[in-house]
Image 1 (cartoon, rainbow, N blue to C red):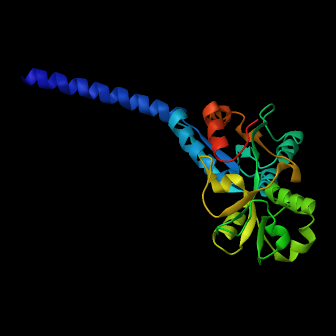
Image 2: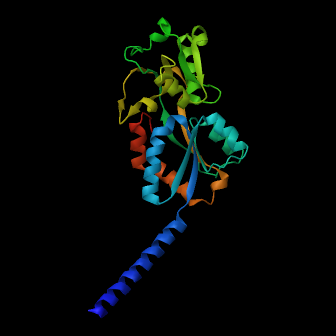
Image 3: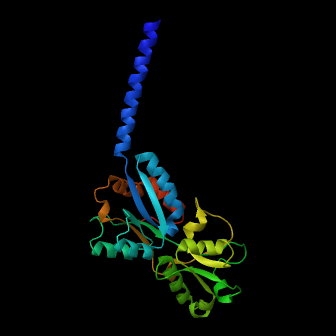
Amino acid sequence: MLQAASRTRRIVATWLTVIGSITACAAASAEQVHIAVAANFTAPAKVLAAMFEKTTGHTARLTFGATGAFYTQIRHGAPFDVLLAADDERPALLEKEGAIVPGSRFTYAVGQLALWSARPGVVDPQGAVLKIGQFHKLAIANPKLAPYGAAAVEAMNQLGVYAALQPRLVTGESIGQTYHFVASGNAELGFVALSQIQDAGVIRGGSWWIVPARLHAPIVQDAVILQRAQANPAAQSWMDLLRSPKAKALIRDHGYAVP
């Protein structure tokens, strides 16, 4: 009886040692990747980060903001490993400047612009509210920093309403801040990313107009691995996930086209 109990304790101790070794090896091989994420991609990025940790054991640390601001920060040495931009212009500039891992740039999403109000009945399905003008404040993202803001200005110019609406514009530093202006009611309506108001193909309330793609240049969103992360396996694992069929389906569900 005593011998059996002793043998059981030895077996348990051995297994605990083995499990501890496996855990230690997994911890040693796990890495962290610091990702600068365009604000429009906040919702899908958070889901992808959870998926990433579960499937790879690596950790994704996400920072959200405006692509133009990220570009400036990266040029001044900000410690990002990956950039998920809201355009293809800044990633192309970083590539030209030798700041990315060669061959890492690719398009992960093509964004859609929407005119949205948190209240039903404010925005009509044709966007005629922009010409009728029965509102006080219209929110847009800073067109110098945020590609969705630049697209909004281009669309308003195409419609011939930009000059008349300029006195009513409220400018957010990113599309994330712009969304909060509208969601909080500080602006009756605003130009946001469709992805901010859509989940699983369904728009989450309020009233909206999906801006026709012909009214602005395509919002092509590129991802790159930055030079500092060329030896970081977590950075490449993140990009592999971003290209996967499962990630592409998730990105589509959040209101993007996927090339």
